[in-house]
Image 1 (cartoon, rainbow, N blue to C red):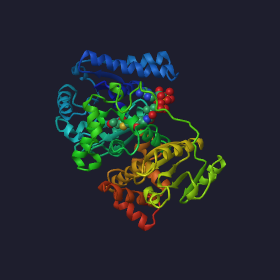
Image 2: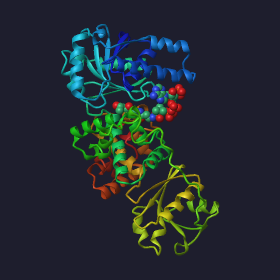
Image 3: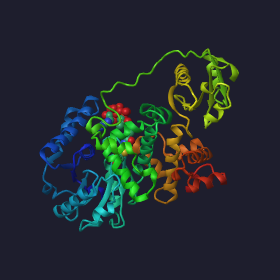
Image 4: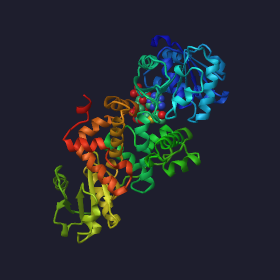
Length: 490
Ligand code: 3HC
């Protein structure tokens, strides 16, 4: 059945639309790309030429293959040219009124058998379908940025979608070299429903001064193995798009976790939209933040708390003297929050930092209200000597990495618990849609359900944010001694 799609239309040739056009053209389909005016059409052509030019430069395409791909795309400013298309996908801005108006026009122009697909990030596919006389032939086909690279396509069926159409479109996605995950019509589907709250949370933590932009980005990249930090990814997605998705999620859920962080609104209003406008959280021209490599002056260090990783031994090995707390120039408390509770019991509370070693590459360095700037600087310097990137942060529950990671894992458990998607589909979607090294349920198994549950309790106690309370299912699994949600679903 998937073979019936031979000619496709793509309406909207911004970053996503042009990427989607490229994906279809690479798979051998004839593509008609439509934009509103000649200037936008030229920009769309430029995206396609740029992306395939990059592949050519890297030796991934020959000049002839590139010419063939570009040759399969016809550019036009007229929707009327879509009359013969077997499938038309729209990738215009995330504004419901625009989408509904477009689908009304497509319904008029396209042949009755044509499938009308939307690449919406979060808007209701059902509401879009309802503007047409063929709601059974309307479906969501959600690609991920950069479309030529990311392997996932979310196929979104509604209650009115024709029986079998989701399978046909999933077959088409496979023909494009993608992996489809088919789900029902809920705001944000799988990926954006889990991704955007995490990105929004990072923006809120930045705004609260928990840690700096580059430090949070480094923490999630190096500490969790994500391909990009949250601010680099927000800039890639576009802050306007990210803001809109959060708004849609919030309208559906009224969950404060989905309410866009004020900094997003401010940047969007200022026209700082991320890569598409040249500046967002990051600006391409700005210098990388300097990483001072000064040798720490503290020679004597005390280590408090459990030290299963042998951190004290590593310090000795690097030439530092391990001493009693009274004599130490620097005191590090390993993995225990709140650090300030320990600080107030020390003779020199200004000399204490909390330290959380995350993986092999980073360590969070938490300063309390009493920690001196010199102590924090010395601690960061000694971590560099030990080969770790320091992530300076405030003394707040779960510091940076776990504060961002655990609520995301909790959201995934809630999604599974709601019956919206299976464990396997959620894991697949996050890995292939966002390039994560592991899905949320794989990550939960690795960290241990009890560790995550306890971390969520600590976060809830600190921030009093209702969505940080452990999902009932997570709580029950820990109580029952079940080690993996997979044991339930298999
Ligand atoms: N267009 C085409 N190809 C691109 C590209 C682009 N914009 N950016 C990167 N690539 C290709 C490169 O050519 C390269 O291919 P090659 O190995 O065949 O030469 C490959 O991708 C890797 O690129 P780079 O080496 O330049 O860079 P990285 O290794 O850092 O990868 C990345 C870049 C693929 C963007 C990676 O950082 C990543 O996976 N990031 C996460 C992206 C993500 O989460 N996307 C989903 C966002 S949510 C979304 O889109 C939903 C929407 O509704 C909001």
